[in-house]
Amino acid sequence: MTANETLPARLDPEEAKRVRQERLERIGSWLLPLLIMLVAIWLWDRICVWNEIPQYILPRPHVVAQTLYTDAALLFGSLLVTLKITFLSLLLAVLGGVGLAVLFTQSKWVEMSFFPFAIVLQVTPIVAIFPLINIYVDNQTAKLLLCSWIVAFFPILSNTTLGLNSVDRNLRDLFRLNGATRWQELRHLRLPAAMPYFLGGLKIAGGLSLIGAVVAEFVAGSSGQSSGLASRIIEAGYRLNAPRLFAALILISLTGILIFLVLSLVSHLILRRWHESALKQER
Image 1 (tube, one colour):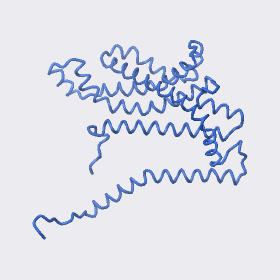
Image 2 (cartoon, one colour):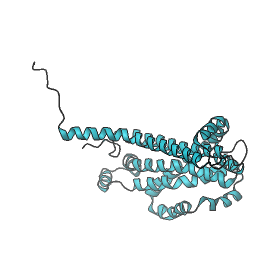
Image 3 (cartoon, one colour):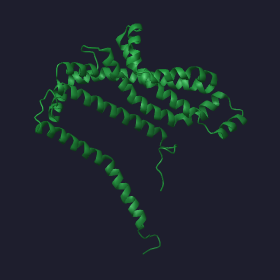
Image 4 (tube, one colour):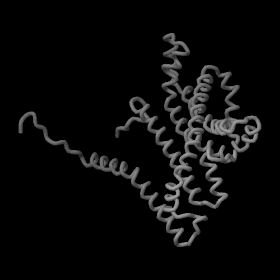
């Protein structure tokens, strides 16, 4: 053995056990939910067969999948309508929530004056507000957009406000001792500190904006070829078309999961190099 050669590194039993445990956790994080989902689908199919449930009451999974394929043009066209309301309301919630949160941090009087109204919007059910919106707003798209925005707005506002107010006091004092202006303190200290809080609120608001869009379509009772998925669900319920109803529900659920995963990925990509929540923990 030459001087440049080294012995192969060997893990001690505790380290090897930890590595195996981490590998099992990585595999189990996607394998276990997949297995449980497959078992649930199998049980769904067997319940339909064993109890001879009619298709218009509870369709079998393969019937729902077939309907999702045959009605893809109609369902995915409606999904695009719902997604348009979802993402527009989310964008407005981000702009309004972040802007108002910044204004709150600049003036406690503004926060004390307007934050209670934001809470009122959050705690009031959208189905109770919609009759007023229906009276004052003529455009159908604007009605749906406003309802979805109300649902998604508060998580962005509250989380961003919390993040902006959670800056370390020592760092704030350091900025002030060095003569930093309010804008410099906001840009270089408060906004970076609030980023994890904002991204957490964004993940919540992403799902709520989809929920708000669907609920708004339900209470609006919109119909026609340009209507969203909620209208397809209502229509399928009236016609006892359970396969299409289940297909629309599955499409909404998958869309919500995809939105959450995308926003989680965005959050990880932004925070992975500097924030403790996204860094790999050393054991």
